[in-house]
Image (tube, rainbow, N blue to C red):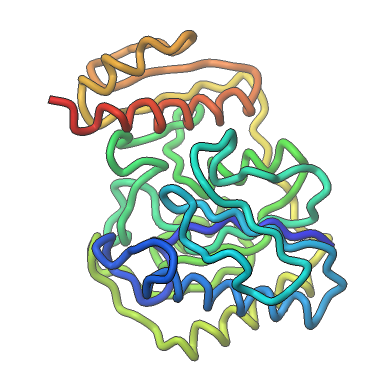
Length: 274
């Protein structure tokens, strides 16, 4: 079995704001390592695992120290920029995708550090008129390879958002109170939940369905300022339809996914432009 784990940090246990986040050996990074260790230990103890690929995907992907887990099955994708960012390295050889430390989409009531792919330059992303967050965007990308998302972790707000879209094992790490406030669970409770939900994944293995979004697909992105729209509108194929809104249409979700990344990467250069 091969498992691909895309990691963010806003949804991990004990964290309430970006002020607490540091790279490498900081406290926040140690919390992420702790959650990953729970998952890796549970998988390797209970299943025949060929590879667990960890795609370090918060900010510049430099949050985990190389060689942290002591398992030869673990591979580690790090650094930035990269072609498919949070999903870099995924292909059809994998059996499952886990999304760890994820967060609610932008504008969510009580969602911790809510945003959708870029807190600095993107406000809302819509696919065929439906507002989506990073879980949905990445789940559809996994569907290009026919790989299902089989486990997610984050706060209770994200959990409620996914009830109908992605009814898979879920580890609730905390309860959102505001954008930068949350009710935290104990590390012991979170560790137990990871063990239980990995077991739930193993018990249901083979029953999960990959999420697919087939063409024609209309992507609309509301950026945070008109100057960001001024900049990204130069991208070929991207149509500006309002002061802060751009649109892209394609039959290919792969192209749509990478257009979202293009807007986030390019638009972020102009987030503080004056």
